[in-house]
Amino acid sequence: PGAMLALRRWLDDGGMAGMLADRTLPNQSERARVATIDFLGRPAHFSDGPFRLAAMLRRPLFFMAGVYLGGNRYELRFAQLADFGAEPVAGDALEPDRRIRAALDAYVSQLASLCAERPYNWFNFYDFWSDASGSADDDA
Image (tube, rainbow, N blue to C red; front, top):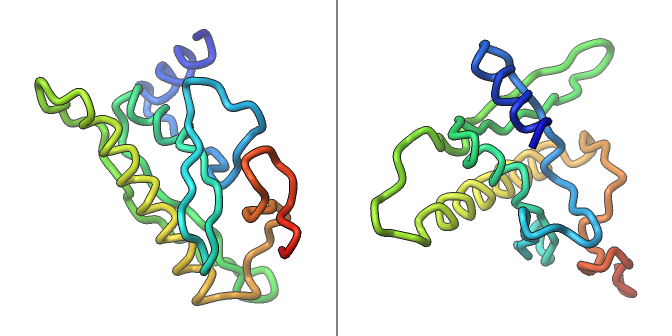
């Protein structure tokens, strides 16, 4: 709770925060869920934790990536995925989960699109195609 309150203060003061949203952790807590979403032609696991945090803090959420252009040149790309600042629909208990899932789907779509556009530009050693327990698929 202390870290979340500090983050809220930081954001309220005009700060920005970034998270690696493409990771899942073993033994996820009840505060985050792992969704299995098609990614580059295979089911992959994505945590909705960063998206839930943005929703709890009622903040806009952006995709950000740095595309390597060669030498010392990068192109930064930003795309708004969701704005959780809007009031939730009264009486719709599932509405926050739907908005979180829509933002997660938009994130995976952005990531896949960028990987397809620049397939040799993705410097990531995280195994998306492991099972939820963290062990790799046999045919990976």
